[in-house]
Image (cartoon, rainbow, N blue to C red):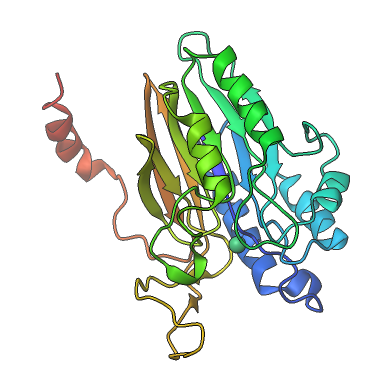
Length: 286
Ligand SMILES: [Fe+2]
């Protein structure tokens, strides 16, 4: 099972630019790279901030762009989205109690996996949310399938990553509620998130968390505290390459890869003269 993740595309950041928009070009290049892979993913999940301002025409644009993907595409909202407009464009997206929460059952009997997509969006908030309704849904899903390995996808990572201006307060009620809901559910093998616009690994309640780098420009790595009354001219966003993630579930193990996309120079190819090297390396395998 191979799951592709694209996050934080922020289409509509330059609303007048239309198809020429910087973020649209970045999304196009990421989709082109992903679709050119000879090993296609089984699904693609867009983990929020699809648009920058919830504009209907931006969802329509994204829908047209992902229509080229020869695999299923799922979406969940981020804090820059508009849930209603997103659901109008992606009308086959399942919901529960008005929230974009749903389970994806994979059908490989020998290597079962459940994917739970969560909605952490609350209009007007930059940070996440996880109300009692959403928590009850997750609790039910987890109690009904205690033995099936499960990956959770959500926009907001349930943690403070140390990038001060992006972080939640560590005692926010939604974080507490989320942690209480997942606590002790050993079938959760990983939480995959976005929002931070940079690759981050961490652990919450004993569960590995993996934050995917973004399609839109990156949040810079700066772990100094922020004084909200003393702007210090630090760089906070940089045009690092657009990226996506590939999560490989095989033999009961999950491995996450991060792929930046650009016109990189190829420095080596597997040509005939490298066969002895490959044979030598493979000979170590037992
Ligand atoms: Fe974002």
